[in-house]
Image (cartoon, rainbow, N blue to C red; front, side):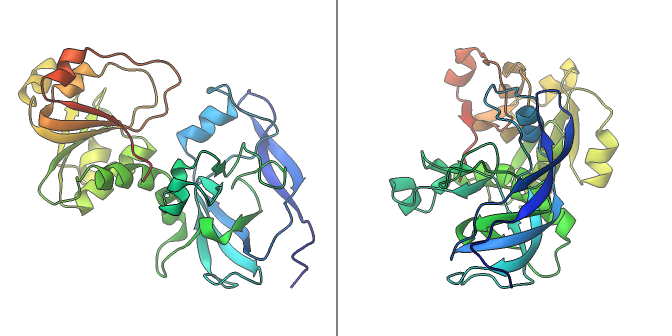
Length: 300
């Protein structure tokens, strides 16, 4: 086993400008420490947030940038104080790789709310080096931000759970929507939408996929197991579905009206926004005042 104090060169696919084009990029991983895990990347999912960051849609991108935060790999080396992992373990890394460890959120084990949290890429680590993500050969990550992939789980299927899966499971848990028998809607059938259908069905929910066209009906109903499919432009069907849903997970990553979907909710129903949208959204307040709830997604 090599020295943990020796920097390693690795290669990743980096955005070097907002063009959206990735190209090979060789860089040096930060020095690994006593609590670090050196990981050979095997799979990495593609999240719509990666696209936003690559193209600087949010106005905060720093280049060169190696994206990717749905990372699954194999442990190749561990620090002397690493107790949770060993060489050969299959592990995952999500959107965070650091936090202050001293603030109230960190002490409550919700470090995703830490004001000094460190993103897995497009950020700066405590040693002053830029963080780079999972579109790469390898990563060095503090063991606190590494998770064990259960034996028997297909690694390529585990990767999307580290962002898209968490994005759906978190609000369902946070807002008390895990009990079976609920009627839920999934607005948009991209990556997060796919996870939304699968997770909600696993919880025993009746799931309606809501989409702008009919083209994903077969995928939603036959491949993912949704119970109903609703085209948002079909005014008659939308009216028939009014006041029928306990919640809607809105996964659409672009500006869109909210009123048509608020009308689908039951009294005290919840519309939960999970899409990253880079323009201001508007809605008519009476729709919320009349017993419908609007939430930004929880990060729990």
